[in-house]
Image (spheres, rainbow, N blue to C red):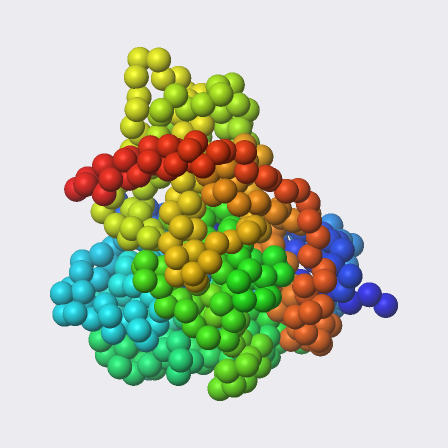
Length: 501
């Protein structure tokens, strides 16, 4: 009898449910989109009820496609957008507000205030993160200060705060569990990397109570069992959870120190496995927990990663489609860009929600440079794809300096990694070979691995590594001179973006 595992992959714009068997054969998958809400410039929110509806519908559709009953599912793994924060009532399970999304910039002033108190080094040393609106802790502080019902729930001892994994686990278990795991907890600014626990001192500096945060258990731990759902029977164990980028690192079988992957989704995220010892960046990259497979107090169970992230990758293509109306479908951008051999000097800086690592400039805005009377939409399309790749070149350059050695290859995944032109330019501009797996949605695969490790389907990471299968390689074609010229063109454009108010 086959063992079936369910991954719930909850992203920034939609939820995907994936069913695989123990041989990692894809049985079925289904995706449901949900809207983002923009109450004012720089603010990005989700309605948690819309997310939950997308979860229930995607799981139901996947089961229907697979012709399986819910009782056939042996275990559930969850992977999620990480820094997005949800607020709900511990007693009723009802949400108290919209979720504040990782892209949201409303806490920029609070971050600057903390920096003015010389606290950034304190947070960086303890959490591996920077004081930026991207992370969850300042979102919690803002909500407590500005949303009266959130503050009242905290005063009444009823406030539950958590990243999306924590919220979904609460919903799946009939509001019986308020838990998370280290890869998500380590994105909050309130979680101490080496203590591996939410920290009273960090919470005090943020101005949030320690009591609002969930219990932290291993990434392959016992998160609870399903209860009271109309799309799954009671009693299915949830045995794995990982933040989306750490899940992709596991799904790419980057299980050994020095191995790296880049995921091209709404944003782009470059992660490198650094083993059981955290590596702290000298270039404003992030140190984070990749996963914890066992007791959090035992160093050998913890894997750390070095991370660089860009806020906008696939979102730039969506903006090119929806904001400018220059293409009908996101996939059309590759064919349009291919109608010209180069961008003719047109350069796009995708700072549509600020610039992430290694610049960390939340006030920067996107811009095109090099536009002339001869510029066509095809040149702009090519520049948008190149801009995504250029951002990754900045990340990798910083990461290679932090680890003291160059990468030989990079595993790539995510929806935008299916764009062959983007991947070839990425290989060219990095000067390293790119490896794209057969199953490109490695975030879901990482959740499957975490759940399977928790349920005993696989015994160790060696079995995970053996399962990875290559789809296509992209070999760099640029000469060192060509690469240097292109990088200089990009740096000149970024310098202009950093000067903008």
